[in-house]
Amino acid sequence: MSDPVRFLMSMGHVLAVMSLYDKGHPARERAVDESYEKLRDLVDGAGERQFTFVDREVVFHREVLRDLKEWEWGPRLAEVGVERVEIDESVTRDDYEEFLRDAYLRFKGESLDTTEARYMRRTGIRYGPILVGIEEAEETDELLGTSATIAYTLQDDIDTIEWMHRQVQDQGDIPMLEAEMVVRSLSTAMHSQEEILLPLLQLKEFDQYTTTHSTNVAVLAMAVAEYIGLQGRDVRVMGVAGLLHDLGKVRIPKEILVKPGAFTDEERRVMQRHPDEGARIILGRDVRLEVPAIVAYEHHIMLNGGGYPSMHYARPTHIASRLVHVCDVYDALCTNRPYRDAWPSEKALALIEENTGDDFDPQFALPFIQLMRQQAIQRVRFANPVVVAA
Ligand SMILES: [Fe+2]
Ligand SMILES: [Fe+2]
Image 1 (cartoon, rainbow, N blue to C red):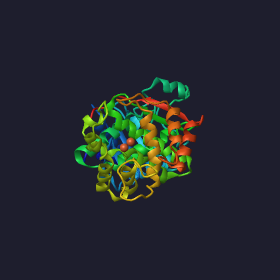
Image 2: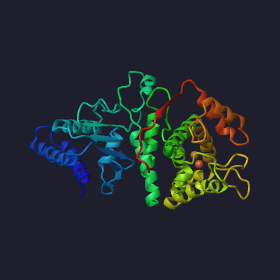
Image 3: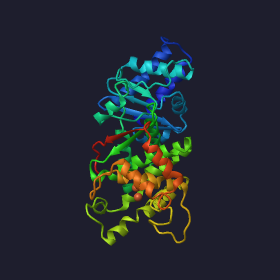
Image 4: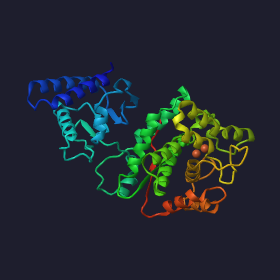
């Protein structure tokens, strides 16, 4: 049994014991002592330790703890708003006990504070719903006002996406749970303010294009999906489809991906294989990922059948592909590329408007344009942090 599993099992034991004995009872104190000891084993000499409870899964940093598949406390914690627990070396036994007590009260419906994240750096243990956000860019402080007490960061999500791409490249495997978690956490970030917030990343290094772009397309696709009235699961499917749409690029040589000048015919041919490659990778992984696979295959196909891959016979593409297509073109235009500067948003929207009906499906292009022109939307362009090169 690994340390994190051992610790969580002992924590589950304490939570069970708490329903039997009050504070001060020797059995309860002993259970806390033992569990705290396992916690110390885990954090001593280590940086911050992070657990996530979501969809019946328990995740330690990015590793799914399969031994805890049937562990009842993960889903129970998630249900009462404890989706993530972060613990660092400074954690004291009192902090830990306080956390356990609050979790226990939440189970009983007695805690006053089930929605707010305990994300203050007050103690060595912090917990709450999964949050994302805003750390890097100083300009975001201004946009969010000083009332924002929660330090958000997109860094975890960006790291996860980078890691996902490497995982696909090296192992041929898509870590789906992580992809879903990123999408959930982006969606939480979008709703963390009164107004819808679009946390878009700004490209710093050209070789980070796929990570940056995938994140943005996921955010945009979810925003449009919600705007046209989709909900819950359907919105997240669009998010996952956006996140994975360019996955096939992991199979394209880097020299071509970051080439500063125009492509030769051969290079273009190679580049245009990414939809096909992407669909193959996704389908090879999981049949439940049908929509993301279709989107990976079709996201460069225009409404009138133009674009690539060329179709043997004309047929309408999937609605998700048409939605992602708009978001994809918009983000590509609004990003600095080796061969041109980023376009201002309005210029990109005008181009989309002009080509609606031919290239873009009005069903998605018109709401997209409307949404992006709305004052109520806060578009925050995050400078993306340094990412370990793939
Ligand atoms: Fe693409
Ligand atoms: Fe793309």
